[in-house]
View 1 (spheres, rainbow, N blue to C red):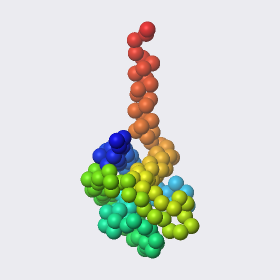
View 2: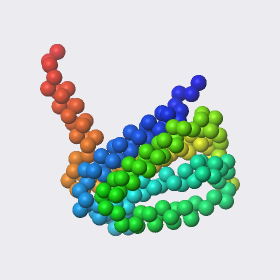
View 3: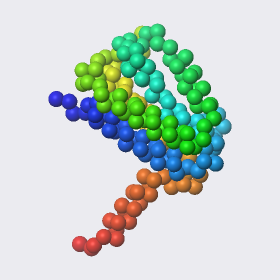
View 4: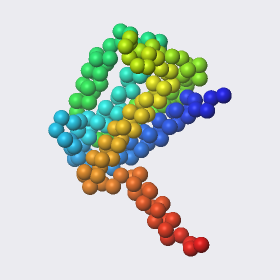
Length: 182
Protein backbone atom coordinates (compact mmCIF):
# COMPACT_ATOMS: atom_id res chain seq x y z
CA UNK A 1 0.00 0.00 0.00
CA UNK A 2 1.30 3.44 -0.95
CA UNK A 3 0.29 6.30 1.29
CA UNK A 4 1.66 9.09 -0.88
CA UNK A 5 1.98 8.59 -4.58
CA UNK A 6 2.39 10.51 -7.79
CA UNK A 7 -1.03 12.20 -7.67
CA UNK A 8 -0.42 13.35 -4.09
CA UNK A 9 3.00 14.69 -5.03
CA UNK A 10 1.57 16.55 -8.03
CA UNK A 11 -1.28 17.99 -5.93
CA UNK A 12 1.12 19.20 -3.26
CA UNK A 13 3.36 20.76 -5.93
CA UNK A 14 0.32 22.58 -7.30
CA UNK A 15 -0.47 23.91 -3.81
CA UNK A 16 3.10 25.11 -3.31
CA UNK A 17 3.13 26.75 -6.75
CA UNK A 18 -0.27 28.38 -6.13
CA UNK A 19 1.17 30.08 -3.06
CA UNK A 20 4.32 31.11 -4.94
CA UNK A 21 2.11 32.61 -7.67
CA UNK A 22 0.15 34.63 -5.10
CA UNK A 23 3.42 36.11 -3.83
CA UNK A 24 4.58 36.81 -7.40
CA UNK A 25 1.30 38.62 -8.07
CA UNK A 26 1.41 40.62 -4.82
CA UNK A 27 4.93 41.96 -5.29
CA UNK A 28 4.67 45.11 -7.41
CA UNK A 29 6.35 45.05 -10.83
CA UNK A 30 8.66 47.90 -9.83
CA UNK A 31 9.97 45.76 -6.94
CA UNK A 32 10.98 42.87 -9.25
CA UNK A 33 14.45 44.46 -9.44
CA UNK A 34 14.74 44.46 -5.63
CA UNK A 35 17.72 42.57 -4.23
CA UNK A 36 17.58 41.71 -0.50
CA UNK A 37 21.38 41.91 -0.23
CA UNK A 38 24.32 42.33 -2.57
CA UNK A 39 25.25 39.16 -4.43
CA UNK A 40 21.71 37.74 -4.18
CA UNK A 41 19.11 37.24 -6.89
CA UNK A 42 16.60 39.95 -7.64
CA UNK A 43 12.93 39.10 -7.12
CA UNK A 44 12.64 38.54 -10.88
CA UNK A 45 15.67 36.24 -10.93
CA UNK A 46 14.46 34.29 -7.90
CA UNK A 47 10.99 33.76 -9.38
CA UNK A 48 12.52 32.73 -12.70
CA UNK A 49 14.82 30.33 -10.87
CA UNK A 50 11.82 28.75 -9.14
CA UNK A 51 10.05 28.43 -12.50
CA UNK A 52 12.87 26.72 -14.38
CA UNK A 53 15.01 24.83 -11.85
CA UNK A 54 12.82 21.72 -12.13
CA UNK A 55 14.51 21.22 -15.49
CA UNK A 56 17.32 19.49 -13.58
CA UNK A 57 15.16 16.66 -12.22
CA UNK A 58 13.20 16.69 -15.47
CA UNK A 59 16.41 16.00 -17.39
CA UNK A 60 17.41 13.25 -14.95
CA UNK A 61 14.08 11.48 -14.50
CA UNK A 62 11.84 12.35 -17.47
CA UNK A 63 14.21 12.84 -20.39
CA UNK A 64 17.24 10.64 -19.67
CA UNK A 65 15.51 8.38 -17.11
CA UNK A 66 18.88 7.91 -15.45
CA UNK A 67 19.54 5.19 -12.92
CA UNK A 68 22.94 6.71 -12.09
CA UNK A 69 24.14 10.30 -11.82
CA UNK A 70 27.73 9.32 -12.68
CA UNK A 71 28.80 11.59 -15.52
CA UNK A 72 25.69 13.77 -15.41
CA UNK A 73 26.49 17.32 -16.58
CA UNK A 74 25.14 19.27 -13.60
CA UNK A 75 27.31 22.30 -14.31
CA UNK A 76 26.18 22.61 -17.92
CA UNK A 77 22.53 22.36 -16.99
CA UNK A 78 22.96 24.86 -14.14
CA UNK A 79 24.67 27.31 -16.53
CA UNK A 80 21.60 27.20 -18.78
CA UNK A 81 19.30 27.77 -15.78
CA UNK A 82 21.43 30.70 -14.62
CA UNK A 83 21.22 32.15 -18.13
CA UNK A 84 17.41 31.88 -17.93
CA UNK A 85 17.52 33.80 -14.64
CA UNK A 86 19.39 36.62 -16.37
CA UNK A 87 16.93 36.86 -19.27
CA UNK A 88 14.91 40.07 -18.90
CA UNK A 89 11.19 39.40 -18.49
CA UNK A 90 8.23 41.47 -17.40
CA UNK A 91 6.29 40.60 -14.26
CA UNK A 92 3.52 39.20 -16.45
CA UNK A 93 5.97 36.99 -18.34
CA UNK A 94 7.47 35.68 -15.12
CA UNK A 95 4.05 34.92 -13.62
CA UNK A 96 3.07 33.10 -16.83
CA UNK A 97 6.35 31.14 -16.77
CA UNK A 98 5.73 30.12 -13.14
CA UNK A 99 2.16 29.07 -13.94
CA UNK A 100 2.97 27.18 -17.15
CA UNK A 101 6.12 25.43 -15.92
CA UNK A 102 4.46 24.50 -12.63
CA UNK A 103 1.46 22.97 -14.36
CA UNK A 104 3.62 21.14 -16.89
CA UNK A 105 5.79 19.70 -14.09
CA UNK A 106 2.77 18.66 -11.97
CA UNK A 107 1.15 16.93 -14.97
CA UNK A 108 4.31 14.92 -15.55
CA UNK A 109 4.62 14.03 -11.85
CA UNK A 110 1.04 12.75 -11.58
CA UNK A 111 1.54 10.49 -14.59
CA UNK A 112 4.35 8.47 -12.97
CA UNK A 113 3.83 4.97 -11.61
CA UNK A 114 4.59 3.85 -8.08
CA UNK A 115 7.17 1.46 -9.55
CA UNK A 116 8.94 4.35 -11.28
CA UNK A 117 8.90 6.46 -8.11
CA UNK A 118 10.35 3.53 -6.13
CA UNK A 119 13.34 3.08 -8.47
CA UNK A 120 16.69 3.94 -6.89
CA UNK A 121 19.12 6.34 -8.54
CA UNK A 122 22.82 5.91 -7.82
CA UNK A 123 24.79 8.99 -6.82
CA UNK A 124 28.40 9.63 -7.86
CA UNK A 125 30.91 7.68 -5.76
CA UNK A 126 31.69 9.22 -2.42
CA UNK A 127 28.29 10.86 -1.99
CA UNK A 128 26.12 9.99 0.97
CA UNK A 129 23.70 8.39 0.73
CA UNK A 130 24.86 6.35 -2.26
CA UNK A 131 21.32 6.09 -3.68
CA UNK A 132 17.90 7.68 -3.32
CA UNK A 133 14.51 6.77 -4.69
CA UNK A 134 13.16 8.84 -7.51
CA UNK A 135 10.29 9.75 -5.18
CA UNK A 136 12.64 11.29 -2.63
CA UNK A 137 14.52 13.16 -5.33
CA UNK A 138 11.30 14.47 -6.89
CA UNK A 139 9.91 15.44 -3.48
CA UNK A 140 13.03 17.59 -3.22
CA UNK A 141 11.66 19.86 -5.96
CA UNK A 142 8.80 20.86 -3.66
CA UNK A 143 11.22 21.36 -0.76
CA UNK A 144 13.43 23.52 -2.96
CA UNK A 145 10.54 25.76 -3.98
CA UNK A 146 9.39 26.11 -0.38
CA UNK A 147 12.93 27.14 0.61
CA UNK A 148 12.88 29.93 -1.95
CA UNK A 149 9.30 30.85 -1.08
CA UNK A 150 10.48 31.49 2.47
CA UNK A 151 13.00 33.93 1.00
CA UNK A 152 10.23 35.61 -0.98
CA UNK A 153 8.08 35.98 2.13
CA UNK A 154 10.95 37.71 3.90
CA UNK A 155 11.43 39.95 0.87
CA UNK A 156 7.72 40.79 1.04
CA UNK A 157 8.23 41.89 4.65
CA UNK A 158 11.21 44.01 3.59
CA UNK A 159 8.95 45.63 0.98
CA UNK A 160 6.24 46.32 3.56
CA UNK A 161 3.90 43.54 2.38
CA UNK A 162 2.36 41.14 4.87
CA UNK A 163 2.52 37.69 3.21
CA UNK A 164 -0.85 36.25 2.27
CA UNK A 165 -0.41 33.19 4.49
CA UNK A 166 0.21 35.50 7.46
CA UNK A 167 -2.89 37.54 6.60
CA UNK A 168 -4.99 34.37 6.32
CA UNK A 169 -3.77 33.14 9.71
CA UNK A 170 -4.52 36.53 11.27
CA UNK A 171 -8.04 36.44 9.81
CA UNK A 172 -8.63 32.96 11.27
CA UNK A 173 -7.34 34.06 14.66
CA UNK A 174 -9.57 37.16 14.60
CA UNK A 175 -12.58 35.02 13.68
CA UNK A 176 -11.87 32.61 16.54
CA UNK A 177 -11.41 35.39 19.08
CA UNK A 178 -14.58 37.19 17.98
CA UNK A 179 -16.67 34.02 17.87
CA UNK A 180 -19.46 33.18 20.31
CA UNK A 181 -18.50 32.84 23.97
CA UNK A 182 -18.84 29.37 25.45
